[in-house]
Length: 140
Image 1: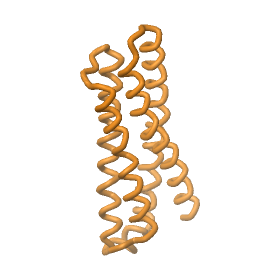
Image 2: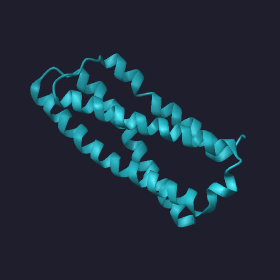
Image 3: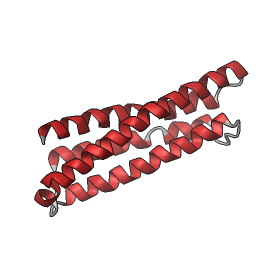
């Protein structure tokens, strides 16, 4: 089961790299006014979203494997795991929200400012801190 846990962590890191970087691309994209620049960001965002989606799928796959493999029974009474899973569900929603914004940019229909994306970019960092604390400290 340690191999499964290791792959879970590897895919999580890959997914999280995208969750932190894609919204930063949105910040720069929202501030770009020239057509070649906008086109370049559309391409970068599409490719990054595809790669981070692979990370997300791997994270969820190996996470479910861990739960199925007996960790759920061992930790079912531990509130930290339930809180962590709830935060992962929020991250999945954030992931799909990123895709929504990505598609809006690609269609030339973005309605948000650079400032909005700067705040939006901070959400996964805050969730990362919470997940790390829950997984390592197991406070409840």
